Image 1 (cartoon, rainbow, N blue to C red):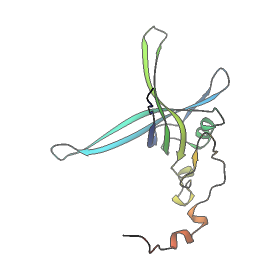
Image 2 (image 1 turned 45 degrees about the horizontal axis):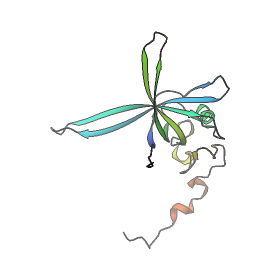
Image 3 (image 1 turned 90 degrees about the horizontal axis):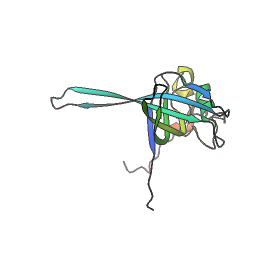
Length: 159
């Protein structure tokens, strides 16, 4: 059997606060609505823009607390990075109609907005991802803690 890959990476903004619920077995799940956009110029040179909306599902399972992290830290307008897989589902509604949905099942999440709309100095550090084995509540360091890291020049750069 040949190998295949189902991987999605999104960077976008939440269109509303996360919706968090529990399954019958007690597993918590968060649903996010994430907007991504693209811009281009049409044949006549006019700027065009299109927004795509993505339904992202984050589960608390296998040691991952993604649903809890989303509920605690994310809110409408926040910018996030999501990595996961795309999944298509069908079901019958109460009226017997077949319904379809496309979802991104999130495996990792990185918060890209500052906490509570704060300044860049208080943002999560690069790599502060929350995934299957990581927790958002680990200690966070910023460039503010190490100002000398921004002052050094590297003369070995070829440009």
